Length: 338
Ligand code: NAD
Image (cartoon, rainbow, N blue to C red; front, side, top):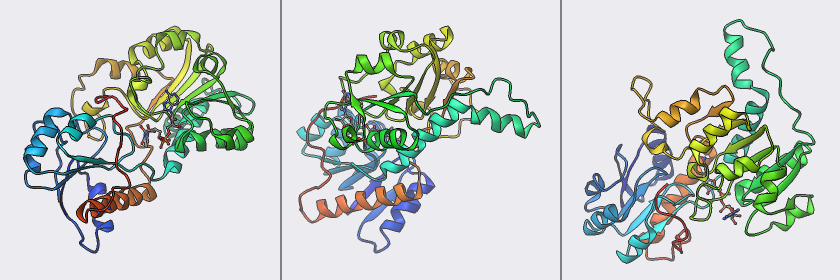
């Protein structure tokens, strides 16, 4: 199948070319993101392949449909950046990679938590400057602390298990569906309000939907335990960033580790080190010593990249041969922009 791959980085190309070693599909790689201004590049391609920050809104979808595109393949799990209703109206199927390596994201989440709590990123920078002082590097034992896991699907479940069984944390969970296996090991499902009020650490693993937009807002932060640590490796807009900054300034929030950011599409995945970054909210966030930000890299392991590429090409093969699409996104449950 002829497929236009958008937002291509060298590592995307390497993974997709390896998975397509038998040449079943004909990929053409484009560096730009897909949006209404670039969608015409896909004219004549039966499929497009996009990533987390491509803007697949109604305007882009209209251009894709007019150009003959029948399939939009997301090489990621989240699909909040696609207007599913517009795609359905135009007869375009949307597929994603529902599961690749939940371990990649779960392990990275634990890494962020440990680094934030024990200030490992500060220690690394200090030692490189021959500063071996421990002043300011005091952390807390995780053992015995209460951690709230919001969303106990593939990734949240692994995080909850690791914290419960590996670290001896008291794990609270909030989800619309309870995982019986987590309950069996002592994870307790509670309301979001109870989780917020009782947790020393909150880790977000639910999708971005209308219900979860700004789940962590001024009210949630005010209700949280003073000094709470917040970890977000899910989607940026789960958190109201200006509210976060206010809570960091007052000391109500003890620290934040983010792999995702509400306005990340203007920043992440690019080298902007010689540019003047225009996002003042993001720049303010970076000034706090107790804020740790990574650029949406939690998924980025060799295993995850290989699995993403394989699942994406399998979906294209299904579409090409008229088989049922096993990774089709069925219902327009999520919001269309992040
Ligand atoms: P999943 O679908 O397996 O699990 C999501 C869970 O959230 C489900 O159990 C669902 O019931 C629950 N949920 C839905 N609405 C909720 C609500 N209102 N309150 C509480 N829970 C709710 O998804 P996953 O594979 O575990 O991925 C979780 C999120 O991680 C995805 O939404 C994706 O956006 C994000 N993600 C980030 C990266 C990264 O690199 N940072 C990589 C992959 C996925």
